[in-house]
Image (cartoon, rainbow, N blue to C red; front, side):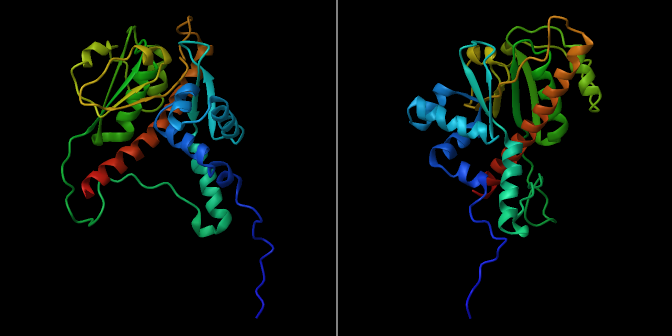
Length: 270
């Protein structure tokens, strides 16, 4: 019996697989899952010439997987970021292109796995510290969003290198998400200098350059987010920037929680 090939079968792998499957581009994607990076950092991490690294970053940008923005600390520098939500969507589309049953669904975040009747082993919360310059907007938003999304599994904190008053738009955007942060204060990062954290995440390009070392060797990452605050601190037209910042932080924190959960489950098995 002669076999036939279905006319619906794709002649080529989906674009995501062709794009991400290149060894250098896969390594770049892997590095960007951990932290936003400057091109010179990525060049050193992947061990390639800067021209070749920039070429592959351009391919990933064209494919919609990576974004870039000028550093707010030094306009000559550029930070590259991985769009994890876009990667998840494109990977799901690639699976479905082969077979509908291979469409990927996000894994559920669960407190434990295995026998549902087994009481989970108590464990201390994972401690996460968010840093920016003023501790008035980005890091306060991140702290509040992680607290709400992570619940008892995490303990979030935030601080700044030059603290200033909590921005009213930060209060407003969180109130619309069901969290009241109006009573919170801004804190200097020195308040946490002796404390141990599992993750320390800078959200500001400037504070990344002055961030001290932290005891206990936490996982350190940088999320390069523009400052939603403006000189006209309470101008109504600036509020959409706070909404965009909160949205981006919500997405990044969702993936951070997946990574935390995976790390905890892996340590429990070992």
